[in-house]
Image (cartoon, rainbow over all chains, first blue to last red):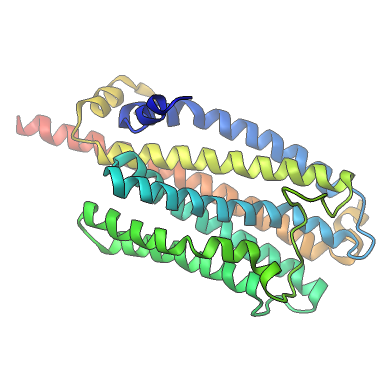
Length: 250
Length: 54
């Protein structure tokens, strides 16, 4: 894919059509992968020597935490592109990332608490990893509230984008918090450069679940971005022609 | 079968995680779908209003 074809993605009609076309594929493949990942994670993977069956929570906690950070990186990148090129597609993408990212962050926190209670004896500690993840949830909520509170859409886009960009500083803090500080939260189970710290039969369901959650995020993002683009572009002929031609939306 | 639900004594935590994850993911999908439908209806309403004005 060269720069010209990436540049073409900034066209709202093209991006809208792409979202509509890809969303069902993302959704179907993620549902299939979740079914396989859940089955192998809950019933096939052997129990952990120290944590027993409680370790199975990682099949829900780790993918949620991964997507919560990935969604913020996308939101920040889209915000930067939006501010530079005043792109409706980029602003729509950034706005759509926020509620999805917030829900995955919420899931990461709740499943983490459900893991912490039996393992640490407490559901919450003000540990660097947990606190920075909680800040991530607040950043998503702040972005959504700021966007809602400004009636002028262009101003709302610009202000919320600035907040999203500033908040990106939290992403490396979350990721490296377990390295930089002495935390109760364990270090990363999977690292890009090191050998995974869990057995292969426990690792595969985790990789499948991470892939499934990523595809699910892509499905939600496609649907929300298409919705956002439609309403932003309602004065243009392309969306009116598309809606008039699409009986399935009636 | 009861062993599956018991999960070595951690059943509440493991199945609690499963339930809350599935619930949040389903809610996510429903809200995205409803947003799409309502925005498409907003565009249709806008089209009808401009048609009436013309």
